[in-house]
Length: 213
Length: 137
Picture (cartoon, one colour):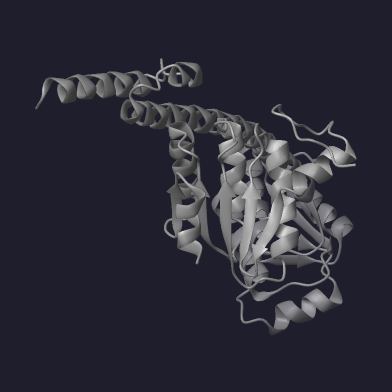
């Protein structure tokens, strides 16, 4: 390699190293002042434009990253709010009331789907353990319809309650629900069904009295 | 009375006459060739005006070529180069671009940067108008 080519290569590599480090000593002004070597001028101009492009892209990337972080923070905040809202909805959709000594009651209103039935079962079993309950009344006066899956949950509810040493009762079965339960292919033998909440409480009270023990 | 374009940056504060004068630098040279006489000092604003004028001229042309006269232009800044690339890429009927720079080596390089981003092929940079026109005939 001739001396001049070696010198040129050294200069170009020097500029590339600068650009790699995010700097560039070539400027539009310095280019205008060196018209004596057009070939070097073109190389320097190319390197300067490349550096300017990289800086602009880096700036755009930083702005995009900021926007992304802001959007992500907004999404996280929305997600947290949704989780809080869901927790509150779950709480409200499966309220457990202490209806007397060792008696728990859960009034249910609205449709029972798989998710809600699972939640009911989890919360009841947990409450039985915590409250050392002996009776659990599931008041389904407000449940308009029932499907096979929900009916199976009632059977599981009765079995699981029994395993924890308590007795389960279904109160307030509507005629339409009764019809569904009768026609669905589910063994309801383990379920104690009573007409309404009043009757359920009376039975609990009788079975809790010292005479019945 | 037509306004004389000066070698200074024009922005959104430009008068209606100045805007008309800037846009008039885009002309139809022949049925298929649009000529862009670049401003002495380009800004993203002047680029947007030229692009508007080019869109107006080429709207009914299924295909057109662009002849860009950079012989009296200064070297475009990075924001101008970015604006050029972004707006020119939208012309699907622009199939050929030829620039001539009048021996300004800085413009030669700047034009190659812009053209390579707008079009992978069918783009050329020449020093003289005569050489540039040969590609379009």
